[in-house]
Figure 1 (cartoon, one colour):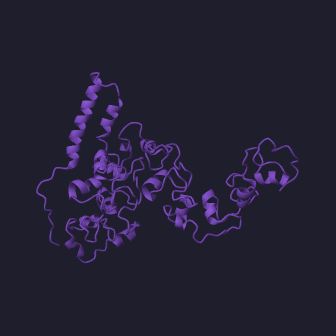
Figure 2 (spheres, rainbow, N blue to C red; figure 1 turned 135 degrees about the vertical axis):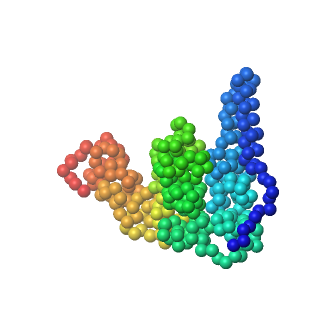
Figure 3 (tube, one colour; figure 1 turned 90 degrees about the vertical axis):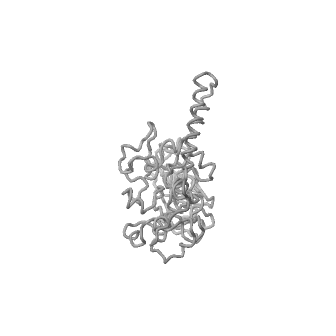
Length: 359
């Protein structure tokens, strides 16, 4: 194949320019505080933010704001190339997966020696690498990665890069299980195969092992001590990196079925139109499948919590918790209380009547 050369003789990475300017601003702000010109420590905090690269893609956060890329997504256009590499190495558009509009995405062209700025070479014979991640479809089938997704584990590294360069697992966003995903580690210059260096600043672990560091959870508003903040059956990190759902909202699309149920049953948690498609009551408990998804009950078990009351009866008649055998924590199952005529939502009457009766 004839080697392609870009038509750019000299290029100074914009990140370098912004970095120098930002460091100067940070220095000035710190100097003002030290010499009494300002007592507002927020000046220093804002100045420091100017030199942050939250997603480790090689672009500073404030630079991403100017360009229009996502400072929390290392590959904003999902073409298999980091935003920083697109901007500073390949000169492609990190907001457009096919910069030259030739029909092949930028990652596919770069990984196969084509010019992502020249649409004329996009019409070369078909390459058996559908997603342009540097792995053939056959290799992806062997590895178990997705041949139509250049970044199967959504860690910001193309599958081919993980297999051939970083030697990380293309199916695990955090290969070394250290709490920082592989793409961020590579961007920071730490070793994605060594969990001991994942914490590049003290106090930023991933306490609940959900794929988000504590500082990231604070930024997002999720609970760093709970791997599934909204209780929808998906880890916060999965929601943020993989499914792009809201880790603070059980039902992101507002269609009536929670995100975890939709993912588990092959539905789209970002499209409310499919929430009630082919809806039925498979276990005859009085709740449709979509309703079971909403409440988190088992659509194939009429009494999810095994308290003697059907899920539908608990939700629609007794107003008890279909996921909890003893809703009022009084010491007796909800079904037993209903049978005896006591209140399953009041714990002061659980032992007030004859216990010889059984449901």
